[in-house]
Length: 176
Image 1 (tube, rainbow, N blue to C red):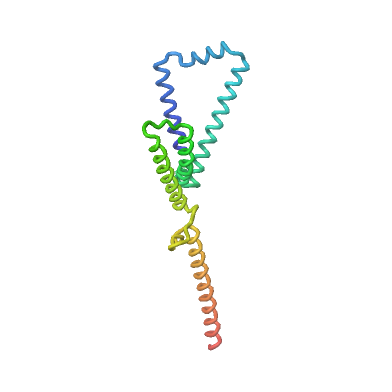
Image 2 (image 1 turned 90 degrees about the vertical axis):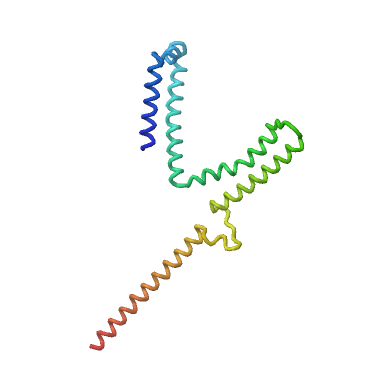
């Protein structure tokens, strides 16, 4: 909500400043309306409304994604895209100046580094869990399992303690 308020304030300030320097800010729109047919103008209004709704949906999606996922999830998608972009630019946009042998060396070096970065990002975000050298011990899954196990043990101890207290009370009442 606060982001929307600041966006509205900044857009209003921009509109006011633009109106001060340009005495008739709508002259291009009026000229377009007078020169074009009604069908094109209606299409323009529909496209503007569609843009408004789609940009609002994109912003709502962005906010929901930030609430559900961490910024690292967004970075993960960027990391996974890097090797593909390297391949694309190597094949289609390769205007390397200098020795052609270095072109292949640079590509291989960058590609290997990007694969290592993707692997580390997958491990960091726990999409790839390494089950060696006890590296899985502090993952979300293992911590949840330990928490559930500890909670179950505590519940059983509380139930056993309550049952034994009840038995003691029954034994004490029989003695009197």
